[in-house]
Length: 314
Image (tube, rainbow, N blue to C red; front, side, top):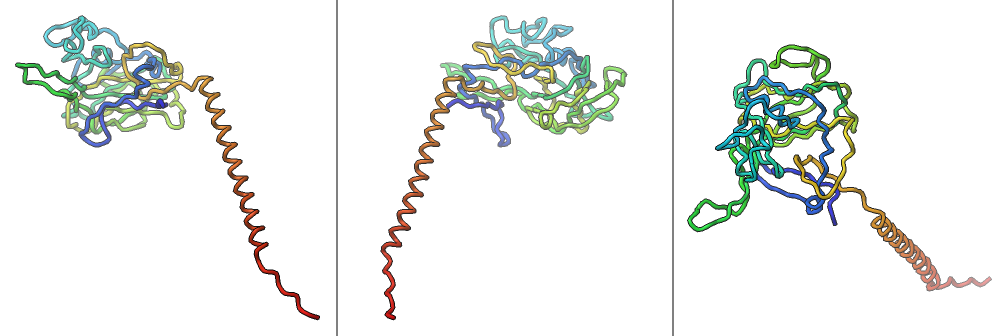
């Protein structure tokens, strides 16, 4: 039977273990990218690094300057491969789910500036936020086929050099109001901590499915030096204005969602299930009635077998 829910990820709950698992159903029924609506907004940060790449990874816009793909440059990361696939998508870009996408890299998190480091999304209009998803670190590189004269080969996927470049001690905040200031300063006047940012994949969902109202800023705050540099490869947001999640076939998925949901069973399957349920209920009822009847017969048989008491003479 097919799974109803698929959890995506490449890291096991066991520290240091890398694994990739995907249900067969979702290989044939990819999700339409409607889980996150990413409303219009501007990415800001006081971290050193290419801020145009930070904006590009959020909304897919073209960077201001050329991007470095490896041994060549291009106007944007999707232009890097030129038909050569993942091998032509490197350095400032990363191959994700069959496409070349922008990533933001910074080493400033190794020595946090006073009072703290941050990167944040400032929405054009306040919105009610339901979910926030962050993905950090590098990727698993594909296995290399062993060929004669080429000793570098391996039978399984292996982490790349940026795989562990994630935040290990940061905070997730939402902000309201306007504070103004420069691009290196916070844009909202009041912030509220809603979660912890640590590891390769961070998924936050509003408690009891109640969206946080009137959110203008979504900020990741880094107060302490981190163990590794930062590689941010996805920053996604879902608001109350997002469309319901749908599944279609076929479809090329640009960014895998944190959770994929299988559609409800179709009418024919529902009818079959209902018939099986009715048969099971009937069987249990018959078994219960048979057991009760057998118990009554047993009691009667026991009472018949007991010797009758002798009557006393007057």
